[in-house]
Each structure stands twice: as structure tokens, then as C-alpha cells.
Length: 159
Image (tube, rainbow, N blue to C red; front, top):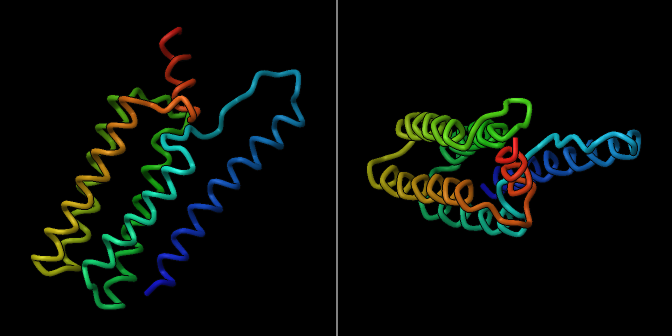
């Protein structure tokens, strides 16, 4: 039960650390060239931690059977990966395009989750997903100066 959350958490941390390592490696090899951002962070590390703990609490409150919890974790993990890649610089999506694609991903999450839950669980899931989606969109509209999303958007404005 907690193993799936631990695996999800470790996956997220490893993807973050891989990105940071890749950026550090590129910077050390190409000090004379301009810094090429390989990943745009929408949330600060502290915000990501808070979101992860909150999401675990929300999922625990669903009281899913262990096998359903694993299947639900897979749905969330695969789609979170798609959400993280919406801000890849090479995709060059505008904020409105990111929001449109985000809507599509959350529709997909909800469709895949519905068959795993009873009505009460699904209603709680929908509330959680709405809060997550709104939080993501809020941060896109109001980027923290502590993230590279802020600098990236400012740079796009100047182009």
C-alpha cells in the first residue's frame, strides 16, 4: 500500500535529480555557451513535497483495496509523467496550450480512474483532481520567482 506511494515518490525524485544532473553536466562541459534549460519547473521543491504528501493523504482517504490502489497508482504515475513533460522547452508550448493539454490529461485520468472506484470514491477522486489541476493552472498563471518557469516566461515575453 505505502510501497506504491514510495515508488511514485522515488520516481519523481529520480526524474528531478536526473534533470538536475543533466543540467549540471551540460553546464560544466559548455561553460562558454548559454545555458539551455532541459526542464521547466512549475513548482518549487518545497511545493512539490507538500503536493506529494497532500496527495498521499487524499488517496489514503479513498480506502481503496490494495490491488485497486496499485492500479490507481499506475494511472496517476503515467499521467503525471505526461504532465511533467508539458513544460519541456523543446515543445515550446504556450501557457494556453499547456492548459489545454492539461485538461486532456485530467480527463484521461478521470476516465481511467472511474472504472477502479465506487461512486463515493470517484467523487472524492474528482475533487482531488480538480484541486490539483486548478493548483497547476494557478501556478502557470502566477509563476514563483523561485522556479525557472518564471524566467522562461519572462524570456518568451521578450521574444
